[in-house]
Image (cartoon, rainbow, N blue to C red; front, side, top):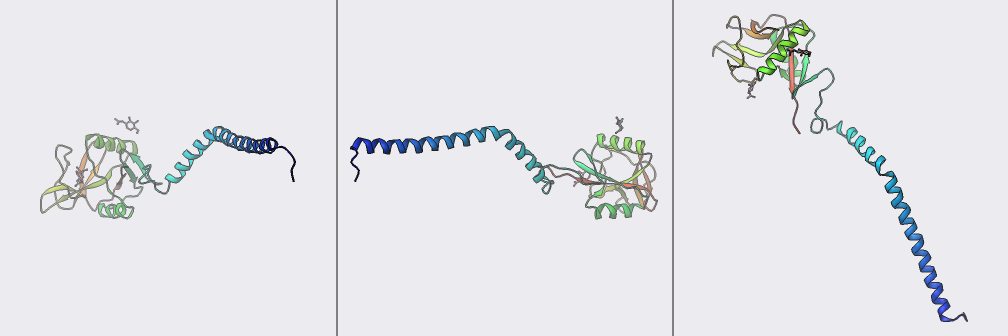
Length: 188
Ligand SMILES: *[C@@H]1O[C@H](CO)[C@@H](O)[C@H](O)[C@H]1NC(C)=O
Ligand SMILES: *[C@@H]1O[C@H](CO)[C@@H](O)[C@H](O)[C@H]1NC(C)=O
């Protein structure tokens, strides 16, 4: 029905194709521009989203101490505010998912002596005299290394170690003292 010449139809088709290409490339371009413009906010969103997501998996991602626990090196510490016999401190730490304090090196020893000084209190730690073996043992079953510290006072039955600003000494396990619990942070 069209009496137009062939080249006219061809030009029309080419024109249409060109128009479509133009629209497509414009759309593409605007999408590109939008991505480029939005890039910084998207990255910021990503970071904060990661921080939020880190909360439920905090043990494996960003190690942090729970409320009431304070960080020290690779540990979280709980400081009791009440005074009770050693065995009650032992149970309390265990209920809280930790153990009584285990002192690993000189630096830690000095840190907790200083801590006792600042707090003005002495604390039970996870060290007890084992009468049958006649040795001081940590609650993790390791024998006390005398190069690390020596417990002053009597080595006798029912003796538990207390840390003060100047020393670690032997006290009766049934005496009332504050205590320090520890929890090890798991490394990533
Ligand atoms: C137990 O604790 C002591 C004191 O921190 C440490 O020297 C020792 O290596 C620990 N033992 C084990 C088996 O973890
Ligand atoms: C004792 O602890 C305080 C407070 O944490 C700190 O400022 C000070 O340097 C410590 N002193 C020693 C000898 O470690």
